[in-house]
Image (cartoon, rainbow, N blue to C red; front, side, top):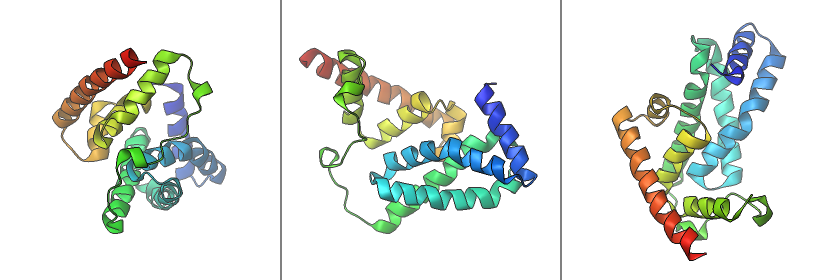
Length: 180
């Protein structure tokens, strides 16, 4: 078990005891991750920030009911996911083509090398569902079971989506990297 996970569990236990500083630190540690996750779903930063705030209200309200602090990450991501999906369903907005949507800001200088630039460019080309599954698995570090719980789908479906998203990413990467 990682140090960060143990520290989060300790913070949650301190929150159960009513420690406001622990809650502040928990929010500080997770807020950016939740906003980034919501943004990947709703593609609107101010909306993602609002969804994150709304999610925190639900997280804080339900935190005492969370019996197993080791489940915090999955449980909280599920709340953010549900709030994001509620917003998408409620907004009934037209789906805008991906190339018209602003991407997460990345300056050219932020890439370590041309290969890293090609990977990120390839990721932007993936459909949203594939970007989400790869982000949860590789960037957020969730296990297959946790992703299944977050998205409310079977573990076999998660494994299949990861496999096909990886294959799609490889194909796009070859096109992008070998064209540049």
